[in-house]
Amino acid sequence: MVNLAIIYIGGNTTRFALWQINEDKSYRLLQSYKETLKLGHAVREDSMISEDKIQELMTILSNFNDFANSLKVDITSVIFSEYFNKIENKEEIRRRLHDELGLEATELTSEEEVNLDFLAIKQSMRVDNNLIVDISGGSTQIAWVKDGELFKTASLPMGTLTLTSRFHLEEMVTKDIHIELENYLEEEIAKIGWLKEAYFNDMIIVGGSARAISKIDRIKRRYPMSIIHEYTMQDLDLQNMYMLFMTKRLKQRFAIEGLDKNRADIILSALAIFSSILKSTGIQNLRVSGAEIREGFLFNHLTEKYGNMDDMLDRSIRNILNIHSVDISHAESLYKFASSIYDAFYPLHKAWDDLDEIIKVSSMLHDIGLSVRYYNHDKHNFYMIANSEVNGLSHREIIMSALASTFTDGLTKERAILQFGQIINRMDQSMVNDLGIYISLADRLLKSESKAVNLQKSLFVGNTVKLIFSSKDPLHFELHEARKLSTIFEDMYGKSLEIEIELLQ
Image (tube, rainbow, N blue to C red):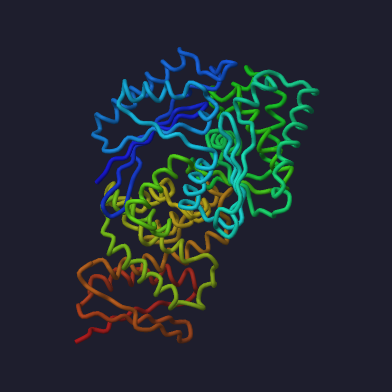
């Protein structure tokens, strides 16, 4: 086991993250902190960071380093963002880090930052033909993902701090300044010729400003999930937010629900950049990535140590199972068994699209609620799946997986539609019920983990469906429990369910 700490120093914030990495390649985030230092505001005309800000930075880094040492961290990596490329006294800061704290700093170029962003996104989101936009304090990195691979990159010479300073966006913006701002952004974006030539499925926004914008939108919508990663917005959502902030003075922005006061002065600049890119490309759909440079650094470390990484969803499931000490082999058996039962009932149920990943998550994570307590473990399942790091699924798919895992003695309640109506609909609920009963049936027949059972065949005779299983062991208790689902099955499908076990010699 290795504990890896990453300290990322940007123009606006300094962030600390600590991961535990196990020998089986699973990992978990143990600690995460940030300090809003806004080094960019303290840069003099000679491109030097002021001494008081350097001292403030050193205090923060000393605290982070002491904390890391107290947790017996094996590796501590300090990363200077590309913002430091233009800082004249960065070598002095690097020297003081070495002399006072014994830390070595790695400085990233714009190209390295966008590559780490891409690595973090590719290992945590499904990508095909997308535009990645990461706004930092001093610049904006843009990447074109084509056929799932990094195709082209570009850098815009403005970020939240520099754009705010140039157009004084921390205060009320006049009409003239607004026009000047829009023209400037349009001219700079137009220099990236391939932006208008390509078609993008969506825009993936990354970084602190992206997270801040998503939080404001989630609170405005009263969104029922708190997860940032894979949160979706429409271009009109962002444009309306941009216009709202354009009419607000700094003190008035403080009253906007969900806005971190440390970002009240620079949030307008981020909205302006995102808005201009949307207008230039015609992109209508946005997704927010909670994974960025720090996660990219983690995945790069894992790749260098272990080689190519497993599929993101399989990796996520394994991480969650390890955290909750669930038997992985039993979870895999339940998934395969539930899938075979689902297939045996076709065409009794609908041929749902995008099913396999949902049934994989809901069946393999079916027992994580037991780590809380046996009673109401189905309810614990729902909360834990809905709030775990399940990479590769949309919020809709996560909620459906969580709901399917709660199906124990009956249909999931109508309350789910009322609570998550922004995310799922009644057709999704029907799919959840179909999956839920087959997972519950598989779980009951596999209760005794030492007894192997296999599905032999399914028979449809009139209004009766018969499932015939085989096992070398008597399954009296398991069969009794499975047959309790017959009434629910008949309510769902209008057919009676018969289950038999053939005892193998």
